[in-house]
Each structure stands twice: as C-alpha cells, then as structure tokens.
Image (tube, rainbow, N blue to C red; front, side, top):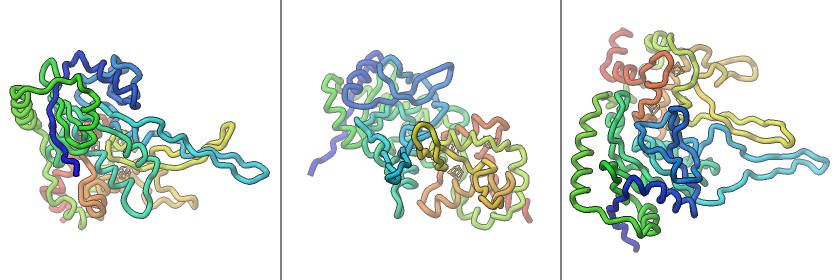
Length: 351
Ligand code: SF4
Ligand code: SF4
Ligand code: SF4
C-alpha cells in the first residue's frame, strides 16, 4: 500500500513563471489571467500570463470542465445515413493553478451532480478525472465572501491536490493528495519549507478566517424550506430581479444547460449554459410554462440551492463565493434571503 506523505515546499513568487513553463511541457495549464481589469481562468502558453494577485476571479473556473459552449459531436446526414464524428478527447492532462478554496469546494458539488445516478456526464468527467488542482489560499477575502458559513475556509483544502499559501515574497506549497505529491516529485528544484514558514501560514490562516465578517446561518434552512413553497415572500423578493441570469452564470455550482443542433458546414450538437432565471428555461413546446413569472424562477434558484440539492446530495449547493451578491445589477443578496428564512422572519410574515 502506498502511504501518502504530506510535504511542505516553498517557491519564490518570481519562480511562478518557471513553474508554469515546466508544467506546460506535460500539461494543459489553466491559471487566472487579467484582461481589461477582469480576472478569469484561461489556458496559458507562457508563465508570464498567470495573474495570482487577485481576490476572486470574475467568472468561476467551472468552465474548464463545463464550458459555456461545448461541442458534443458533429454529424453529417448523407445517403448512407448519419455519420457521427466524436468531439476530440483530451490530448494532455490538465493542471488548474490558482483555484480559491470556495471554487475547489464547488468542483466537489459539481462532481456529485455530474457523476451520481444512472447517467454519468462523460464530457465533464473526462476532464475532471485528468486534472490536478493547485489551489491558492485566500489572504484578502471580500466583504461579500461567506465561505465559512457554507462549511469552507479561506485556507481550506477540500477538493485540492496542492495548496499554495501566500507568505510575502513566496508561496508555501502543501501537498493534499497523492496526485499532488506525484506532481511535486516532478519538481525536484522546489525547496523544502522551514518551520517558520509553516508557523506563519498557520497564524495567517487563523487571522484571515476571523476577517470574514459576512456570516449567514444556514443551519436548518433546508428543513424550513420544506414548508415554504407557497410562502408569500416569494411574491415580493423576485420583484427587483431582471432575470439576467448573471448570478447563475457566474456561480461555481450552477450547472444547468441546454442542448441544441447548429448547422454550419456540418451539423454540430452543442451544449450551452442555461439558467433557471430565464423566462424560457421551462417554456414547453405547447406554449405552457410551469414557471411563468419571476416568482417561480427565483423560488427555483433558492429551493435548488438550499432544499432540493441538500435532499438529493446531502449538502447545500452554494459555497459562499459571493459572486452572485457582488455582480447582481440590482443588488439581490442571497445571504439576506437565507438569513430571513433561517431566523423565521419569512414564517412570521406569512402568518
Ligand atoms: S443577477 Fe440579480 S437581476 Fe440577474 S437574475 Fe440574478 S438575481 Fe436577478
Ligand atoms: S449562490 Fe452565489 S454565493 Fe453561492 S456559490 Fe453561487 S455565486 Fe457563490
Ligand atoms: S436550477 Fe438554477 S440555481 Fe439550480 S443549478 Fe440551475 S441555474 Fe443554478
């Protein structure tokens, strides 16, 4: 039996481009990149493209495994029938570097959705299975971050293979899984960490955790929602929502999609992101829509995150990244909704 041994290494910040350069020889490397003041994940071909001095990326990294638009296969209809050409498979394994703890936890929730039950999503799973995740602990959480309320932590390691922890001019690298350990072994030039580095990180992690002021009480919310399908508050809270879907597109756990056929020189079967906040999301061919107004659509979003998903998979479907709070054009705040349910304000108002 192979025993996994946790090791601690350090890397100077100025050596990150070298690290990426080296990883690029064997892997497809994705890191945060900065373009016109927006930070998001992209495949990088050179070490200098990586941008690690961010708080959180605008878009979540889910699109590495579940792209916004993905060709599932192409096909041609000819006299012989239908000729199908499969989508290209991964040529090289993936390294995802710079993943925040909330987003890494998000992957574990997506794994449940895409891999449990009778139908496995091979497109997601193939990429996911062949990926090493190098996380980046969070030193400067935003005022909208509430990961600690959702069972996470700014220095959390769930869902990571390696974790980078920022200590001034260098990163402490902690191995979290055997996969991470294997990758570290390919980088013999990394220096061992000193005890002082490890102590520094431990105290930093305690302080950053205390700095997260946004707290939401989620305990018991799932059960309370059981009796709230017809609560009058749904009629009110959706009113300012524009139905733009930004909250779901940026969310690291939202995974709804539509599938359509597109005709170019060949037919393509494409999957694209969808959102329960769109009016056509549940529109049926007959013209009937079981969620005809914003009320039903907003209720779906909250119920899915805090009632249906916990019932099906045992966990809330939110990691507290705060993106939906930060980017909603009308300041809809999911934390306020959860808090009001948790503290029985909704129930009292309904009586
Ligand atoms: S981002 Fe805001 S306005 Fe847009 S759908 Fe979500 S809650 Fe509604
Ligand atoms: S619901 Fe909002 S806070 Fe929760 S994971 Fe999604 S974007 Fe982040
Ligand atoms: S139903 Fe809505 S809240 Fe749930 S995953 Fe889909 S888009 Fe997100």
